[in-house]
Length: 163
Image (cartoon, rainbow, N blue to C red):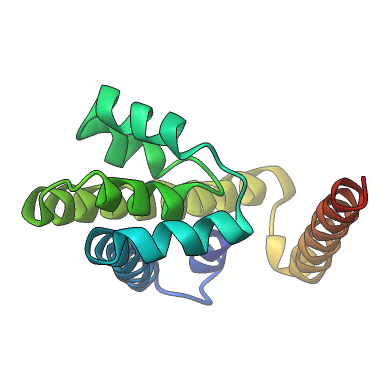
C-alpha cells in the first residue's frame, strides 16, 4: 500500500483509485473469512489448525477484551488480519456490526497507508530533487529488499520445520 501511494505521488497511479481498490479488496477478503468462520465453524477450525499453530484462545481473548476496537487493532497486525476476521466470525459477532466497523477500518487503513507512501514520495522529492531519475534504482532496491525478506522468512520457516 505504501508503494502504491508512492506510485500515486509519482503519477503512475491515482491515489483515490488506490484507496478505493485497496479498501474494497481488504473488505471483501476480511468479510469472506468472517463469513466462512461464522457459518462453517467446525470445518474452518479443523482447516486452520492443519496449517497454523496459532493459539486461537489468545486471539479470542483479545477480541473479547477489546470488542469492536479489535476490528481496528487487528487491521494493523501483519499476518493476523485475515485470521482475526475469522476469529471474529468464530466469536459470532453480529454481521451488521462487523461489516460496518470493518468497512470503516479498511477505509482508514487504506487512506493512512496510501497517504504515507504519497508523503514519503513528497519527502524524497524534497530531499533528492527530481526523483524521476532515481525511480529505477528505488524500484530495484524495493525488489531486492522484498526478495531478501522473502528469502530469510523462507529459510527461517524451513529451519523451524526441520527441527
